[in-house]
Structures are given as structure tokens and as C-alpha cells.
View: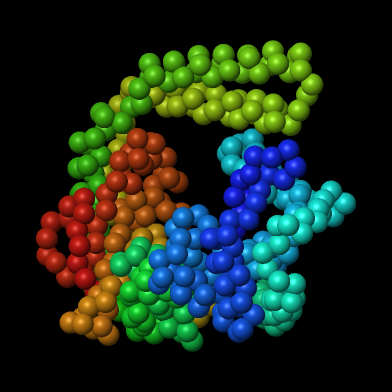
Length: 408
């Protein structure tokens, strides 16, 4: 149910206007009609401590929505007394169980006029829709194909995180990184106003990589730690075979009950989806049982020399990519494998006023594509244990532990 309404138990309408929330709806429409941006409106609401429809913080996309999907508060026809039914169709993915939304055909959408539910004046609505249309037309000409918009355009795209709020550091101005939450939700949600140019942060991260993670001696340190942890934990990784067998019996019974219903009831998509979900679960349990049986046998662990060679190969591959002029996507992916995340936080004593911390995972170094241990047939148990090992790059001359923290 849209923000601004509450449930009403009635044989006619199932909702009524919530005057408290309706005042917020009118304010949002008035502010946008007067020229404020959705980002500014969201920031003001957050500063005043007004909860969003979900009960959390306001975001500009909650207000603006998506032009193609016709969602978002500013595009909701309910606010002018038109209730829309069936705009989207929902179904369950049989493999993942996730709920998937798909636009419905135009002839399947039902519009019902309910003047008693109108919150926004017709004139304000029209002003808002005209501005939304102008904005959509203006920026649609600048859009790029979907596959390109999701590809890395900078060396550290999607790898930088704000240590204050945990959200991403994205390009907030021309070639300057800044906190995405601060930009979209305002200072009341994240107070980190520090930005840094693309050139400066890339230079600092690459310098630290070359001096730390990419140094030849680091390969031996990583490899020794991975090997020791694999040996120590190898006997504790076998799944609980008895529990898996009990789960298999349970899911088989569930499948039998669904099949019985399919023989007597009318065939429906929901029932078929449930059957597929249970069959997928059964396949997963059977695979886990096979792994449990295999885990009873000794695990063939990689040697330290194997690990060192793989690490050195990844380092050489990265240096080759950095030397290329048009290999940004590949270089970004490999840095993500080696680095994991780059965390930034305001610090008046640090260079550029920002403290930068590189956190890396041994699994990213040893188990990535392009020569990782998966290609050498590393047992699943070894992979799981390797993924637990985490280090932070920096200038500290300390033994690698499951977790270190040093700054760039």
C-alpha cells in the first residue's frame, strides 16, 4: 500500500488516507514542483528525522522512482485518486526462490477512479509530471547501453567503501570520489563530506599494492599462512551427514505431498513453482551428501610452492594489465580479486585528509579466475577454509594473522 494511506477494513475500499503521512506526500510534491531536487528533498526529510515509507532513511530514488517502471512517489497515480491494479506480474524463480517482477501487458492493467483517496491537487500533479518528463528526456539522450553502464570505467570502480557508513564511495563530481550515502541521503545519515580525486586515490592504492601485496616476499607469507590454516581446519570441514540425511527425508516427503495435490487439484503455477523449488533443494542436499562422503577421505592440499606460484602469477598479470592503455575492465576485476575493498575515512592527519585502508582476502588472491586453484582442482574443503583468511595491506612488519589493519 502506498505511503500516505492506511488499511481500512471495509467491503468497498481497503484503504483510507493517513493524514499524517499525507501531509508529507503533499510537501514532497510541493517541494519538487517548486524546483527542489529529489536528493535535496530526501536530505531535508532525513535531517528532520521523518521516517521513510520503509521506516528507515529517505533516498532520492524513493521519491523520483523509475520512468520506465512508473514507480516512485512522484509517479504514483493513487495520489490523484486513481488506483492501479496489475501493473506488474510477480512469480517465483524455481531455482533461487526469489520473487521476480515483470511489467504486465497494457490490456491487463486496471485503473479505478477513487476521488476520495486523492491527496495531491491536480495542478501540482501536472507540474510535477511535466518536470519529470523534461528531466527524463534530457538525461535519456545521455544514457549508455546497459552492459556498458555496468562495466568499470575507473580503475577502482565499485571497490571503494566509506568507513563511516559502509556504503560505496562513487564518483560524485567530475573525477572525484565521495560517499554515495552522504550524496543521496544527506549529512544526517552520513557526515563524511570528504572527497578525493580519481588520480590521487588510484596513485595511493597502486603505490601500496606495489610496496606491500605485490612485493615478492608477500607471496611466501600468504602461502605459508594459507597452508597452515588449511592443515589445522581440514578435519573440521565435513558437513553433518546425519543432518543432511534427515533433511533429504523431509524434502522427499514434501515432494510426495505436492505430487499428491497435483493429481487431485487443478494445475497452477504456484504449485508447480513449489515443486521445482523442492526438487532444487533435494538436488542441493544430494550434492552435499556426496561432498560429505568425499570429505571422509584425506584432503589433497596444495603445497606452499603451488600457492607462491599462483600468487606470483596474479601479480605479473596485474602489472601487465596496468601497463595496457585499454584494459580497464580486466585491471579493475583483478584489483578487486587482490584487494577486496578500499576503505576511506576522514582523518585530518592523513594525506589529503583521508585515511585509506586496503583489506584483502587470501581467497581472492589464490582462488580467482586466470590461474587460481580452482583450475588445479582444489578440494571444496580447502576452498572454504582459504576464503576465511583476511589481511590488510600496509607498512606493518607483523606476522600475517587472520586479520590485520594498516593504512595507505
